[in-house]
Image (cartoon, rainbow, N blue to C red; front, side):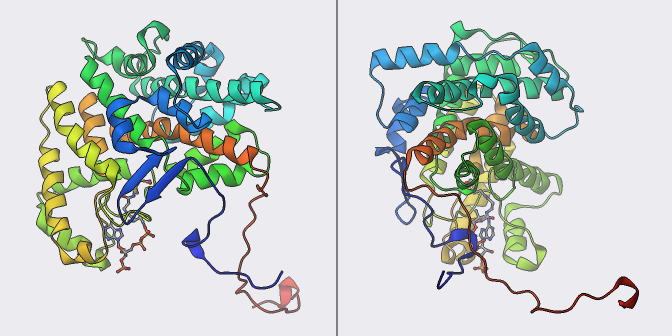
Length: 392
Ligand code: CMC
């Protein structure tokens, strides 16, 4: 009815109200449920943040223990489910396998297909949260041609994920610093209000679509190089600069000459017009993580050089382009032993608590309506059909 506003990319349209995440892009502020990301990254952990995002409050010690125990009880997946992962060619992109696996989950666990009350909602959320790291790890095992180890809940959520994912190819276990670094990266990715994938989860879920299938749609959205695919694209870019014997300065010049089509991947953000607070934390963590892993990476020096040149260049200053969370994360993942193609699945693992919390909030919001944007039609006016033999 009446006037339709044309707003491509929803630059100025709020599609929901939310109590979950607050961002002030001008000031570089990010908070989950009111808590600054800096404090959560330093003092909380992935499971606690998952609880916080979905339920609105930090758990007490007792609530945390019960939640952790419940999640750890559901980390294993059935053998038939592993066979589904193995059915993919080993050359398949891991995001395609992860997305398919999440879509398949309600087929294997039909008890969570329909969320009808608080208990089934909680079970569906716990199941998805619990099985995601196992799925990501098994997808990596498959593309690497390695065996899928059995889960070991006694090790703790993040430690066991790292063991499942990378254990088969490592002689020693990761130390606590590396487990903590992984945990911190996941906390930093846990939610980011109405980004492309989360808006997709809400949009799909607004049709009363099941949690798993809504989240699978979000995973597909995340795979795009302008969104979660950027962490992979950053590493590809850094390797390309190194291998083509380019230097940071001439690459930046190429980016500024827009006809090249090159973008400085890991730079720029729709809402941050200041340093992405997550990027600041990751940058700081990168050095210590590489040290804990005993790895030096010439690509880190290259990345820091690129950042320095970009931040003092008028092109980037005028457009308020700063490093985003994806600029440094890949360097840590790579040092841990993850191949580049696994970076976006790791982003998906991190974002899972946010997708779940946002889907739940949407489902409980009486103001939710099925997502159905309007359009501005620009096609032909009415015309008569022409028989096929009369067309030229
Ligand atoms: N390198 C060079 N120029 C850029 C970049 C970049 N990375 N990002 C934006 N610009 C320019 C763009 O060409 C445009 O210039 P002009 O005004 O002269 O036409 C201006 O800056 C505004 O860019 P935009 O594309 O209109 O901004 P947007 O808000 O639509 O896009 C973005 C945001 C993240 C898609 C974009 O900055 C980008 O493509 N960055 C690289 C990919 C990336 O790192 N994505 C990860 C985002 S953070 C994690 C996540 O949430 O997924």
